[in-house]
Length: 361
Ligand SMILES: Nc1ncnc2c1ncn2[C@@H]1O[C@H](COP(=O)(O)OP(=O)(O)OP(=O)(O)O)[C@@H](O)[C@H]1O
Image 1 (cartoon, rainbow, N blue to C red):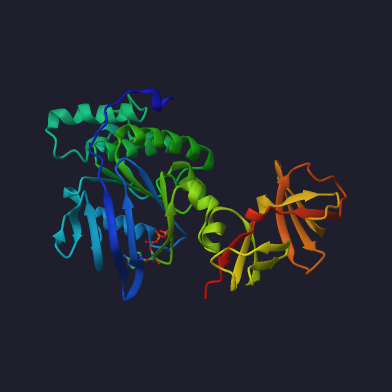
Image 2: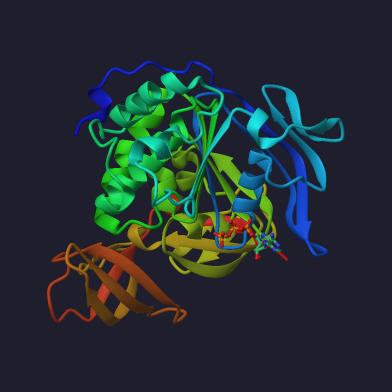
């Protein structure tokens, strides 16, 4: 199915959604702690973070299902939640697709999709539902019941139901979590194509960094109810602002170090300290994939002993001990790069592959 090739109209009503210093919690426990963030019109914003970081709570606040304790939620500069008032969910122009938003089993596919079209005259509902089903590649499925469909097809019906009313903002909470991994990639790609066509502003909650990188125009990384960093996938991956951000997107080695008089003694040799951290305690992070392994001695390479090798098909996971200092280092190299039986290797790490952060208290 090539959804992208189909030519559907766009709602053209994408909205800007702004969280302004939002605070919220339950039973005296603060879950969202002063988050300010903007979802831009027609773009996909992914709220990314570990379990309990407050992602779903932010989404529910955007939907109007929760009223924040403090701060404002603006949709196209109109206060939807805040001191000036509260706009109920049905008046926000938002569509919802939550992981537990199951289809109604006793209703046909068409009736499921038409369910949210209460503002439309009855005769027009069927036509809109049929158009939304065509949009997700399910033309002709109108009379079927949910149990007759595969998991991926059910997910598409849920998507059709969410986009049928042409929301200006579409809020999705872990929308693909119920699908097995192979199906997930396909449904996600198809969903993204549909979302691009509808032109709506999209906010997606996920705990999966690859999913966020694959979908988002903008990622907002959350931890303990606070916004850690926001930017494009490339910005977050290449310029993480903390060990947490670096470790969220890839496996890393962590080391403690001291910046003194502009230099840092790292396990891979002396490197210049970042300009703003000339004298400070540092956290160093080196991605497993940023360590190059050779068997040839080299003046700038760090000798190490191989402790363990794990073959993973296309790559190999190595655990090594540095000869100087004794740090244990992990690396991921292409399978076959290192011949069998090698026990002494040399590690090469580029200057910009040693990420340096001020140690957090
Ligand atoms: N209605 C509620 N009453 C009490 N506690 C709640 C409620 N909703 C959420 N919480 C708590 O708030 C915390 C943050 O929840 P939230 O669902 O926003 O996090 P999340 O980042 O989406 O995590 P997950 O991926 O696990 O859903 C959790 O510890 C959760 O138990």
